[in-house]
Image 1 (cartoon, rainbow, N blue to C red):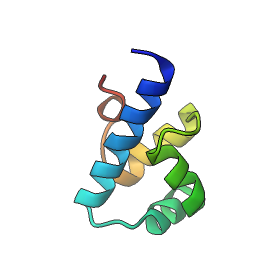
Image 2 (cartoon, helix red, strand yellow):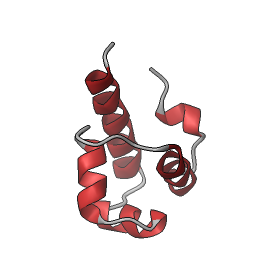
Image 3 (cartoon, one colour):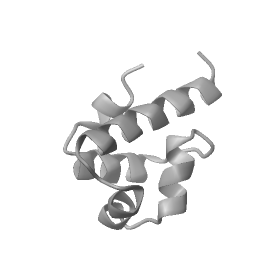
Image 4 (cartoon, rainbow, N blue to C red):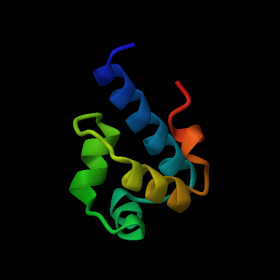
Length: 71
């Protein structure tokens, strides 16, 4: 699996968890100190995601980081 595929799978996982919890992109962005555009980019796999953002996303979605990157 290449990097593009990993980013895409990460984004899909984040989107699925966000939607399961009934969160909008805007709400999730506010929870992690980001913006809606950045969440959209993450969910579409168009940006790299650093460890700090991964940890904030995991905390906001109430999962472990490993649950986001289980691929």
